[in-house]
Length: 156
Image (cartoon, rainbow, N blue to C red):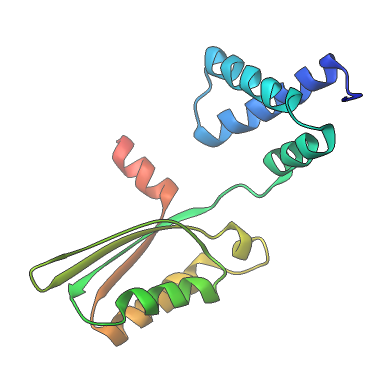
């Protein structure tokens, strides 16, 4: 069915495994081997055009540039709508969101991939400023930090 050699498939799987391992920032030979084996199985089970398209996205796609946005303040209508509107205008991709209300207080944490916007020249500082402005309008406190900063802070 597929006219790509097993050797080519293994090379591609190794490249994808290295890219995945780089993204999760763990350089362990056993982990890379496990990832490569799983990728090889996935490539073998699909028509080659579909498998190569997925592999190209994994290798050549933009690396995620994740930020974490937190907001806290008195609960009121429109907080989620307004902050997600700012994220949408910036072309951010919300990857995870959690919100809670305790008494009269609202707290929300949003994980956003902004690589699509920043690859087109948009600046993180601009998004942070827009979010803080929206927070001021809503009477809430909004903080936006790069995920790598948070990871480094917690690693220390």
